[in-house]
Amino acid sequence: MASMMQPQIILLKEGTDTSQGKAQLISNINAVTAVGDVVRTTLGPRGMDKLIHDDKGSVTISNDGATIMKLLDIVHPAAKILVDIAKSQDSEVGDGTTTVVLLAAEFLKEAKPFVEDGVHSQNLIRSYRTASTLAIEKVKELAVSIEGKSVEEKKGLLAKCAATTLSSKLIGGEKEFFATMVVDAVMAIGDDDRLNLIGIKKVPGGNMRDSFLVDGVAFKKTFSYAGFEQQPKKFLNPKILLLNIELELKSEKENAEIRLSDPSQYQSIVDAEWNIIYDKLDKCVESGAKVVLSRLAIGDLATQYFADRDIFCAGRVAEEDLNRVAAAAGGTVQTSVNNIIPEVLGTCEIFEEKQVGGERFNIFSGCPSGRTATIVLRGGADQFIEEAERSLHDAIMIVRRAVKNSTVVPGGGAIDMEISKYLRQHSRTIAGKSQLFINSYAKALEVIPRQLCDNAGFDATDVLNKLRQKHAMQSGEGANYGVDINTGGIADSFANFVWEPAVVKINAINAATEAACLILSVDETVKNPKSESAQGDAAAGAMGRGRGGGRGRGMRRR
Image 1: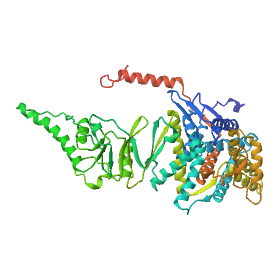
Image 2: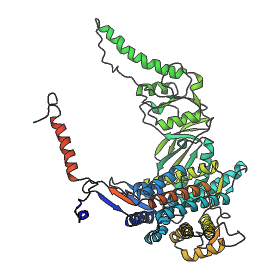
Image 3: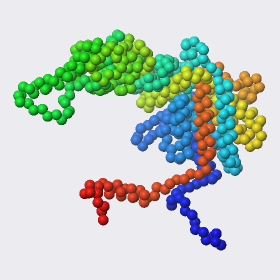
């Protein structure tokens, strides 16, 4: 009787929403599966695109998993984990963002029946981690190195990797054209890791094939004053001066007070301002530079002054463009025009200003250090060019990774099928429940080839059966067989040059398993209440500060 009389313990604030146990886990798995279904159809060369229209009215058409995940305003806390793994895959490797989301969703989908049957999630997590380690070891074992080849051969192999990435994008129709361009751009920056050394400039109009690669730096003509037209627009081997100062006639901003006894003295103060700017300009000319670029404004007086002396100048150059010119031409950005020594000047073989579509571009080519490149993209609609830029970003990242970690694996679902077969075989050697869990992990990996078939409109069951039969061969000759998108059958992905860097697969399996284990380990969600009273108090407090904030010595209102 006494136990019945005990008062109820209130632990959390009133209105706190808590959900726990099996139901909570199932709800999280359902949310993740729903997110996976959104990007599912974008996988592979025949993947569909998503049109995302946000509240500001801007429209994005994209096939890139990371871009779609970023633009989807996901509020479910568990599903947000998928957004994070897509972002991490994008920043770490550049491609495979859709793969990573799909795998995570599929791992959880396979785990769901076990959870419903009362299996403890820690058992699942343990088996998934084991399976992931085995899968990654297998990828490393199957990877083929492209090291030790001549430069030309290596370029060809890297172009194959870039073409595989681009085949699933909007510009897949011109993948050979762009793959070569991307490889040349990555080769141009050499061992330098900074991605911003490859600039991508977008110019609407024209055809995709009108896009070109500048072996150097190109940027849009900046705002210019009168006198600009008289400046020469082409130089051979010019000296380039890079500045971070204004070359404008400015009245002194200091609140200085000057008392004059004679009106003629006033003229000398005005003359001093003119002398300051002329002194700066003279020093620029004396340095021997023929091209003067500044991050800040170059005024009309300076523009005319340089034009009279056959010098080209451009002000308000974007900082990243200026830094890329500095890296390529070998100059240093100066914050003063005093003591300009020859060492701080850059140079290039040809500088010219060219018309590209409706824009004029300043192009520096044949730079001595050559550690930079610019891709000028052309195309019809703005959304199209935006998507082309995202696609090229993925391809550039992939080629960079392939240069650093020069091992590749067959694409087209071949590697996934091979790992799946290996894990199934391995699971049979294990006694206990984990045999089932590792088997389900192996089954989840088949989602990649299955989705490739579904997206291309083939019979997935039929193709998967053929693949399973090929991969089950004892001789191992079927290990490289994947989905053939063109015929709807199966083909040797390696022989067809459908390659991707091993690091993409390793990262995808790692991240997807981590995300799946993280979601499986959550058994309770606590949501703090945002009660109306709390919001009301905050609003009232803000109003009180606004109105009574200026009263006297801060005495409290009675």
